[in-house]
Every structure is written in structure tokens, then in C-alpha cells.
Image (cartoon, rainbow, N blue to C red; front, side):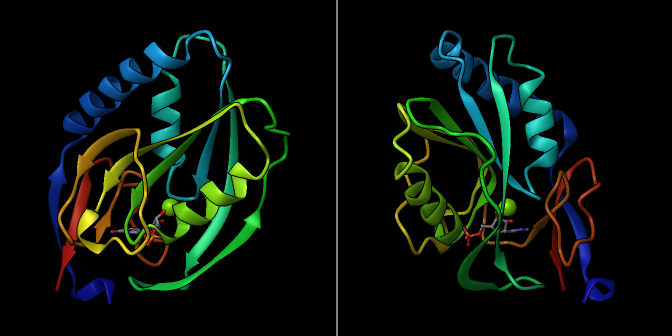
Length: 175
Ligand code: IMP
Ligand code: MG
């Protein structure tokens, strides 16, 4: 399918950088003295997480979980699978989940329930992108980069069939 798709830029690397910077300021205000655990959802979040943590100048820890709700291509399967779970206890810790994009909400709703059971001191959510038009599960977003239209996005970590994660800008694909 990739070869038939045209690519258009939605957010340039400069726009992304200023959004990441703004999020970092907001996160710093709340977490500078809490030694939080930032939990990123792989693989899509790897670039956002790497950029974000370099703006956070206070003690914190970084963890990743690997969840998968997409079989392949652009359609969600509706089921979430834990490919790799947590490697540290989060009981009584301040946990901030970092996501690249929230679409139907299926993946993040599942993860928030899973983490809540571990009894963290607090549990909040930061996502770079939100596609609210397709929501199927209610999701509370505490830190948001951009609302985005209902288009399939690639770049800055986001993929289509594992391609395009390396694009520095966030783009959409159109037939
Ligand atoms: P949800 O479970 O439907 O909210 O989907 C969330 C996950 O699907 C994200 O973490 C992404 O990995 C992936 N995803 C959703 N929308 C897009 C998109 O437009 N481009 C690339 N990946 C997406
Ligand atoms: Mg993802």
C-alpha cells in the first residue's frame, strides 16, 4: 500500500520541538521533586521519549512497555497484547505514561487499568498526539501536544507497516 500513498507534512520538526518543549515545562512544574517513573509505550514513542527526557532536568526513571493492538497496516485489531511488561515495581511511585498517539483509546485504556492495579502513588498520561474523532474508550489526557485530524500519520516514531518511523516531521499518508 505504501507505494500508492502520497505524503504530506502535518507538523514540521520545528513545530514538534516547540510542543515537546512546552510539555516539558508543564511536566517539570508537577514532577521536579517526585522522582517519577516515565513509562513509554513502544515502539512508536521512542523518538518522542528521547526528545522529551532531554528537556527534563530533574531526577526521573525511564521504563518501556511493549504493547501491540495493531496487527499490521492501518486498522486496529481491537485487542491489546502485552509483548513486554514492566521491569520495575511502581507501587507508591509517581508514574507518567508517555504515548505517541491516542486513537480509539483501546491501547491506553488497557495499560492504565493494568498500571492502576500496581497501586502507584499517582498515574497520569502524556501524549504527543490525540485523534479524538475515533475514540471508543474514554481517556483522560493530562499533557497533550497536538489534536490531530482523522488521518493516518507517520514519522517521528510513528509507522505504517514498520516504515517511516525515521521521518523527522509528522506526515499523513493519502491514497
Ligand atoms: P488505539 O489503541 O486505537 O488508541 O491506538 C493506539 C496505537 O495505535 C498508537 O500507540 C499507535 O501505535 C497506533 N496508531 C494509532 N493511530 C496511528 C496513526 O495515525 N499512525 C501510526 N500509528 C497509529
Ligand atoms: Mg504506539
